[in-house]
Image (cartoon, rainbow, N blue to C red):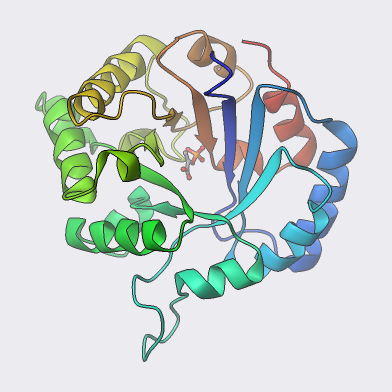
Length: 251
Ligand code: PEP
């Protein structure tokens, strides 16, 4: 791990933890985990808990708060949606884009994903772009092709400098919330495919995360793969003491 690329632990709380629960969680987590050089901790609370989370972490430079999804328009008649500016106003400095639940539960298209990336870059917000194949695509041997198609669609037209600002999360759909995870070697293979594409586009240094049923029993082996620069975690990040143990893992 180079100093340029700190080990990144990102927690996606999905539709869990209201503002009071988020505050209590972070109080317990911050008591258990001190800042450590070379490590960053990112939290993606539900939108209504962003402000409470950002306030709870304001003294910690190693922690950033993000939003789980944004709309690409700055304002308008989009009931239920949150704009990039609104997210920033609440205390988010980055966003997840293209999470598999957005793509496959809410029907987000690759064109939507691209528009979100553009809007976030224009606002100088951080981006974690999620890509990953479904089980049937893996079984048909299409993993690399699917991941590259999603990646290429999302970054179409970006300048090198813009591209280098993205964090990519490889999250096989069949591993998210299922208790099944990619083997470290399989995940590393896909990370190499992603890295190859980014390098060919002039951006060789992006952080690439793995996500999909990461927990205390598999974190060490995953982080032992040099291609895996950190993790994006849902279920195992919901308990502050358990998440503290995971982020304290020494790869
Ligand atoms: C996720 O939500 O991005 C995720 C990886 O979830 P889980 O860790 O629960 O599989």
